[in-house]
Length: 170
Ligand code: 4NP
Image (tube, rainbow, N blue to C red; front, side, top):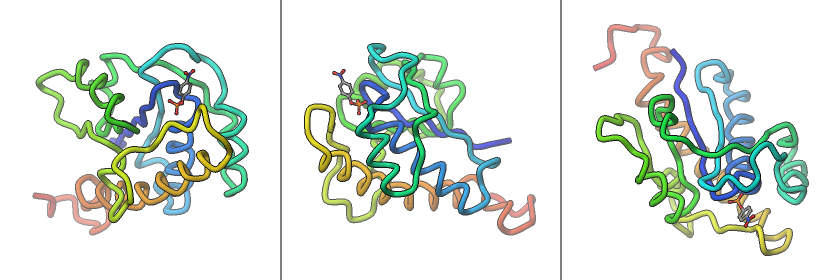
């Protein structure tokens, strides 16, 4: 069964589709695109069905990543039944997510930058009202977090695949 990761921000047109696009590319590089499935969503529904912001598309394209095909949707309570990791870009997103989190959720619902070792910040800042440099900064941060997230998934979900021995997982 695949591991499922949901990236969450406010509008689902800037940060979370960028985080998803970067992480998907990492998975592909590692040949893990079938083992780990991704999606992104917004806590707000203002931009449902829209493509990512043109500035986010352009910033990702500068690093060779195409996020233009992603479409925004809003988080639902059902996401806690579907996903193993629900990763908030900032504290406000996390507070909103926690209001949906059922008591029996056994996955991780936390800040995405919790996975970024030595990141200078805890939150991915909202670039919507700023310039291109804000979008480049988002990319720097989510690239760092992608490394830590991939390591966490490898350790906690894919270890038996790596070792080739299903029964060794404790
Ligand atoms: P995101 O950025 O949460 O990273 O997608 C935003 C997108 C849209 C708005 C705010 C933040 N907005 O106010 O419409």
